[in-house]
Image 1 (cartoon, rainbow, N blue to C red):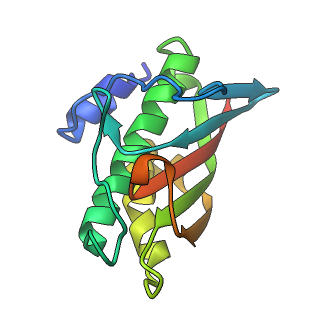
Image 2 (image 1 turned 120 degrees about the vertical axis):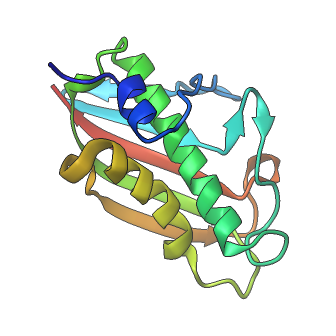
Length: 155
């Protein structure tokens, strides 16, 4: 028997989130063949932006990592919604792409995105190992600290 996303998160003592609704003119997920693309997710819970500001200026590295982890949690919730609660259809995470709202002299973008990568691997195990990009930028929507997008292989 395959475990649900809720069961996997419960085992990690992580509360199952509601998948955020897109805040603009796009869809949260798009399936093409056996690939599921997840639009960029920001650190939001219950409609409230968390971790607002620039990493390395307003927020510490650890705050950026927590923001990236919350983005990844929202990604998993979007995947679960797209698959109608059949999370066991996820075969692997192929790629994460992350954007860090960073101070001009901040250079630890990969370490920030480890917050997202660590959660995906904790939930999916070896199937969670993925290719990744971590990019610094001077702003993100609503001044949130991090945005992460993903691609998954599904059955």
